[in-house]
Amino acid sequence: MAGLTPNYVLRRLGMWLLTIWLGATVIFIIPRLAPGDPVAAMVSRLTAQAGFVENSAAMIEAWRARFGLDGPILVQYFSYLRSVLTFDLGYSLSSFPSRVDEMVFQALPWTLGLLTVATLISFVLGNLIGALMAWRRTPGWARNMLPFTLTFTSIPFFMFGILLIYLFAFGLRWFPPSGAFASGVSVGFNWEFIRSVIHYGTLPALAIVVTSMGFWALGMRGMMITNDGEDYMILAEAKGLRPRRVFWFYGMRNSILPQVTALALSLGSIAGGSTLVEYIFAYPGMGYLLYLGIVNTDYTLIQGIVFMLIMGTATAVLILDLLYPLIDPRITYGKG
Image (cartoon, rainbow, N blue to C red):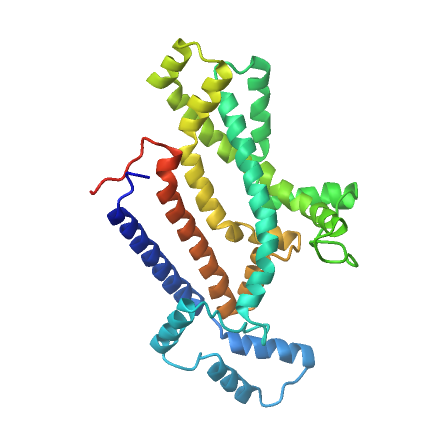
């Protein structure tokens, strides 16, 4: 970390703040470009359920004033920025009086548990497969079999999820088609609940792992082929080091850096990519919550979830930039 100068750290912090501000501004603008009024849509749903809502026009005006949607757009914008700076995400328009931060923090553990584990498994398996495909000492039979593991890469993960539901939920009945855990199970840190969560999360996790590890494999294969002819690889083999050591410490270590960058970005925006998977499996994570917010034109819920995604991605990139010298000692940050 000796090459990490204070000027560089300050510049990265400035870029982090700028990224968050620009992202927050964009997610404030985009929902308001969509046609329709969220409060009117909420009253329309109440009318559809109850058959008649008395004084609906007055109710719409009162709710617009309650959520600050009746003021000028700049007033709404600065009020929104003030709320963001204080992490006050406000109330959900479609689930009032539920607060957005409470809804997000209830859904966040499910998404982190499912998507983080699935992404890390996919990352490890994909990079190992890609490295073995490029490694000259890999046995021929294994090198010929490894491409078959990439067969499902071209299939969207939500389509593969539907296939898994058909085969293993409705066909073989090995796994449940939807949900996060069995009804009647006591929620808590106990084996029965953990086993139920793993059982219900297997199919959505499998859909993500099988369809995404091919991207990691192809990226690692290209990096390993590029580094295979480097001087340090030739020197390591000339010194008589064991092939296993050359593979892990000279081949994979020097090829993994771009993959770690992509991993940080994917982990930072993990909930965004889970929307369709969680919707298909009715999994109560942030992706499913975001889907509900979009369907119900819930400005505050959409803004709250996407803001958390922006914060996660920007923070992951910031941490990764500061940790680069530990991953690769060749990287130093000077004054320029």
